Amino acid sequence: MQPITVLSIAGSDSGGGAGIQADLRTFAAFGVHGTTAVTSVTAQNTLGVSDVAVMPVSLVVSQVRSVIEDFAVTSVKTGMLGDADVVESVADLAREGMFPYLVVDPVLISSTQHSLMRDGGAAAYREALFPWATVVTPNLREASILCGVDVRDISSLEDMHWLARELLSLGPRYVLVKGGHFAASGVDAMVPDILMSSDEVIIFESPRVVTTNDHGTGCSLSAALCAGLGLGRRVNDATRDAKSFVLSALQGATDWHLGQGRGPLDHLGWNE
Image (cartoon, rainbow, N blue to C red; front, side, top):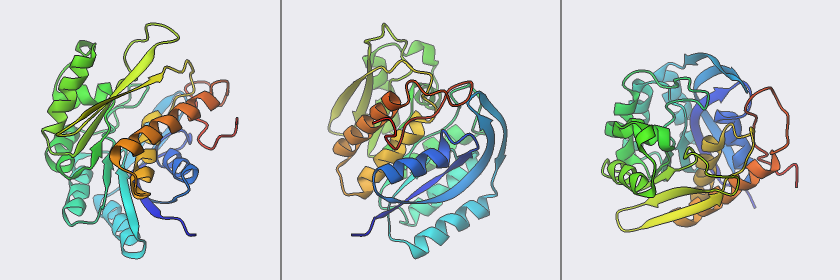
């Protein structure tokens, strides 16, 4: 047997918890070969982001073309793209038919509230990239920004349904709105995610894991979904697998003490 190849177009996290680093560990956990196109370099650790440099658009495009020309890439994900020009360039590549499956994680803001997208990026996602996506995977904050509402006004499943419908109207085949930022009502609270397409709605629930080691959950979920699609799974099944993977990775890292802030996940099952 030889592994299939998938591609992550995303930023680098110097602390190793999110971004390209989390994507590659996730790909390895799913037994697929991960390739990358680095869109940005961040100076960050578990406490936050202190500096960001966005790669030239031409270099991002060259990285993608170099990978696609040599490898039989079966699925692609995007993470931090940095600015509108990069988003639009990735959309141009999708328009050329380069991406068999495309998972778009619209990274706009870090877990420590540091902006990871320059002005115009949200509009570029909506207008240029979403129409080419197989699945878009915003969390509540990102979905609210993309829909022009205050996340504090999103407090129910009905509100999440509305966000998903609004985003679905922009052209992706599926929208996965993640509810992890709902205020917890207790240790045993369940976290709802909504997967919506033009003809079905599925609500996934998972237990809330009480831990400070949750840096990179969004990157890891979208990478796991990308791996599943690349392996030939249906979107519904790949989403279920991705959620199970992230839950296990959160549980495995619950008691880790890597860094002084929000630490990484146990992608590779070291605590099993």
